[in-house]
Each structure stands twice: as C-alpha cells, then as structure tokens.
Image (cartoon, rainbow, N blue to C red; front, side):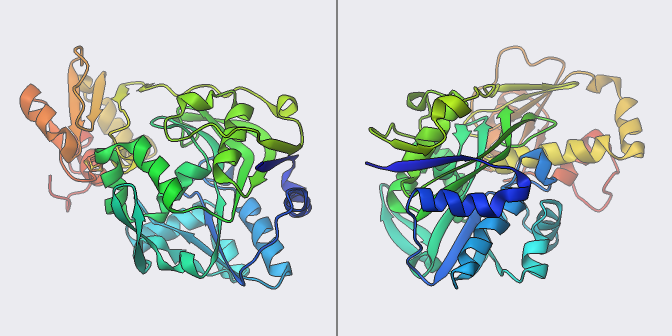
Length: 377
Ligand code: SF4
C-alpha cells in the first residue's frame, strides 16, 4: 500500500519539517549522488508561486548533505534559451544563492548527455545521469491551463529537451505525460505547497492567483503523491487526463480533510484587457510564455506603454495559438502566434507572428513598431 505524508510547515522551519516528513514516510536515500529536479518555469519572485520555492529546495538539499550525499540541481532551460536568460531566471527565482553561496552545482538538462529508454511510443531520450543519481522530484502545487494540475508527474516533462516537449503537444499531451511516468520514476516526490497557484496556472499573477497552503506532501510513489494532492486541491483525479487514481493510499501526518482547500479551476479563455487569449492542450508553454513576456515588456516600459495606448485598433485583441480551429467571433483585431497557427492565419487572413516558438521581441515590435529595431519581422 503506497503511503503519502502530509505536513503543515512554514518558511522558517522547513529543514525540520522536511526531515520529520521523510522520517514519517520511512524514506532513506540509497545512492551516494542526489539529483534534485525543481519546477522552474518563470523569472518571478518565489512569492509568485511559479517556481519551486528556493527555501524548500535548500531544505531538501541540506537534508541530503547532512547525510553525506553529493547534491546537484537540475532543470531544463526551456524557454530561457540563452545562458543569460537562464541566469536571470535563476536569479529572479532565488536560486543563485543555492548555486553560488551553498556551492550546489546546477545542471542545465537541455544540454545533458542522454540515453534512450523504451517507452510507449518507441524510445525516449532521458538524462543519462538518472542512472547514477538518486532522482528527487520537487514539484509545486499548482493548477494548469492545459493539464488541470501540475504536480510530480507533470514536472517530469522538464527532464526532456525542448524538441521532445513540443512533440508531446503534437502527439497528445496527456497521454505522453502519463507514458513518461511509466518510463521514469523518482525515488522520492516532495511537493512544495507553500505559495501555490490556483485559477489559470501554471504561473501566478497576472494570470493565475497565489494561494497560501503552507504544506509539504511527500512519498516514494509519484502517482500516489499526485492523487493525494488532487484531493487536497479539491480536484477529481479522474478528470486529470495524465493521472490515474491510486487505490488504498495511506495518508500519514495531517488528515486530507483537515488540509483540503479547493483550488479555483483554470479558465481556457484568458481575458486580460485588452487581450483575449485562446489556448488549449495543443499549445506548448513555449508559445504562450513569449506572449506574456512581451506584454510584461510593453506594460512595464513607459515609452512602449504610451505607444501601445495610442493605437485605438488595439483596444480589443484576440490572440490565437496552436493548430486548433479558432472560435467564430474573434473581434476586430485577431493575431496568430507561432508556426502551428500559420494555417489558421492563412485561412482567415489574420496577421501572423511566426516562429516555433515566436520571439517575444517580434511580438513587442508588432504592437510597438521599432521597439527592437534590430529584430526582423
Ligand atoms: S509553434 Fe508554438 S505550439 Fe506549435 S510546436 Fe512551436 S512552440 Fe509549440
């Protein structure tokens, strides 16, 4: 019978709570080398809920170090393709301290050596270091626009290179994420439930909302951990396509009923005046992130914001991404983003910003011509 531990915590006693929780579920590390895989998706402060809180990652790293283990952090740079951009992500998310002050090496999984492992669709290239290291999955407790929730099973997508992540969206996102859980499983999944995201995750404001839970949830059966987390979030696990219900899970520590607090569900159409964003599970995060990055640039740069405000035709803008058919009423100013939306753009004669994924600077240039004069349209 799989067991899952639940513990209330707070930011100032994470180390003792991590230790107590891992004792509660009877976890003991086996290997000498430990790979911690947090969930790092946005260059935002820890209180925004986007990323695994660096203090949780630090507490887990210290747990292993106190037991004489060698610890590394590993994550793919995903949308943060350049070294400088990834460095900014680590800095904003509070991770430079772990690397530069505590001396925990950071491995960029996009560049990791890989080995082919059989899975449902043939073979999949996983980081070779998973053979040697004890793999610890450190997701966060969040809702997700495309997958309902993002927990341990979904966090494993970050083990993959960008091209495989895009393949998932084309092949069938939910089935691929589930199949990945059959190909690779961590020795331990520990969920950061401090600053969680509800509503339209997986990122916090301005799109999703932060929800304080002050919880840690852990177990050695990743699917069972995710099942328990869905119950805490008030989400029916049967409705999360990439998960499966796990029978007879033994919850240890806090009772699920005592910590349960229903999360607001994600919306599939995001309205952020003057934008309406249409998205579904065929759209990669790599397509939507440049759009939100462009908006952040425009609205946080006074000159660009003013330029944007002087264009009355941009008072109602519909953003279309991915290959799915657009809704019938697109309003006066629809725009297609990304190569997958090219056919829609051609068929409906809609302006198109190409790229797989699109360059956020081209999106800024579209709304504020000349903002990046060196970037070709
Ligand atoms: S265009 Fe966008 S949605 Fe399509 S594969 Fe590329 S990143 Fe994914």
